[in-house]
Image (tube, rainbow, N blue to C red; front, side):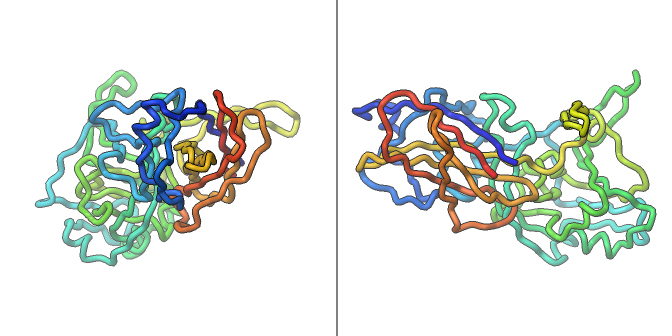
Length: 351
């Protein structure tokens, strides 16, 4: 499968536009390219704008493998929960043999695991004003699967539900019910060895916006699954069908059947889709145009990235091989040596 992303940029012979000069000194090391005197960034005709004070990725400034905290998005559905470390407890119950109640210190005494993973909002890219809800970070915490096994999962348990401290009153069938945010995973998904209960992000305690003191990290899945302010894990014998599993975050997909007809199917948002994004276009001192970007996927690694200029042929881009973590974005670049002055459309696709 491939994803397509298109952006438009203008090349002019003088390359002296103020907007271009303002970006000319941004480092290029993120894509394995060396910064050189005289390199000039070319602005896009439709630049992405980020609301001042809002934590969203600045694509045109992308230069770091790990996303700066002031550009790392966070969202919530029931507001921001304020949870103190003192007195905090993670309850593990439901269909298990040995229920547990763990303090933050108890959790930190368990085996520690670090994993670098890209976190993306499932709504990222839904429109031109929301294309920067993505970031890459190093997460640290304790693996989930060994903890569940130690508790003794009952044979009739089919899924694991994760509950956050954030809550709100919801109207359900005409009545008001207080609801905590929650998402669930099948037993098989929850038992992956790379899921962690994280208490650190980039070597520091989680910020409040990112779920302090504890959040679930599900590498390769959209952020809606990474439950923040985690305070309860429950093993269940039936599917959780709350707002965020049964009504919201449900996609509709048309699938062609053997008879040629389209069957429309609804499914819960889960693993990230494959995507590619054109981040920067830079004119080198020798006249070469270097196009750089990022590509990412969910549970399958990005194998290749191709770029098309206007209506030309698809050309293979070079993928940065310095980082090969399975659940992180990949940076890519391609040189365009025969660029002509004027307006151009750049399209990238990941495979």
